[in-house]
Image 1 (tube, rainbow, N blue to C red):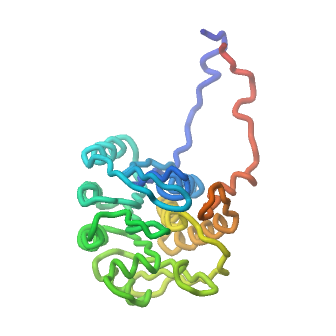
Image 2 (image 1 turned 45 degrees about the vertical axis):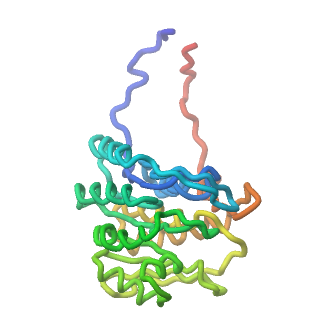
Length: 289
């Protein structure tokens, strides 16, 4: 149905453009981790998420039942379509799952060497189920970490990457030696009264902050931290600035966590919407039916 309104009424001289962040991640149907965590966190960081799903999982807030990889050719095609159309400000990598997916992602990074890369080295779920093929982490070390701007392992992931129990600084120095620019080790898995998160760059401690531990088990905190850091880096912040902002955002989301299921709590990553001023979509009635 047509309208008699002047077409000029619908035109504008310019549109805003948020930084585009591509995220390779798994689909978690509980909405706690994976691609939904990335999208919510990147929106909070003021970015436009461009999500590429590497794997689909069957899981809830209590456990992972199974997962299935997406065809590697589809991953490559999705990335090419985005890269041809949008200026990518950062790439965030979460669940990879398979060696074939890792090869695709490596090729994407090598084809775009100037784009910052944030790697959350997901190997298993918070409840302990494997989310990667056996020994995939060895290929992360050889093929992805040398291409990465910021690696964000928790203490358990750091030990898997290194191959044995290790102090955070020693493990971070090892990863820096492989060629990444910076390493942020999150301390939520340590048995301590405070959660200590630290960043090393150029073999120096650049950021060190401790938070009071919030009681409970949480689902998707690593995704929240790494995706928001990717967003802030995509905004043009330094790595230290981005980690500071991501750390604060993650703590806020955890402190306001929700329990939609019967298992782990889910960080409330859209808490900031509740304090945003509401505005009308249009000032005049534009109904055309």
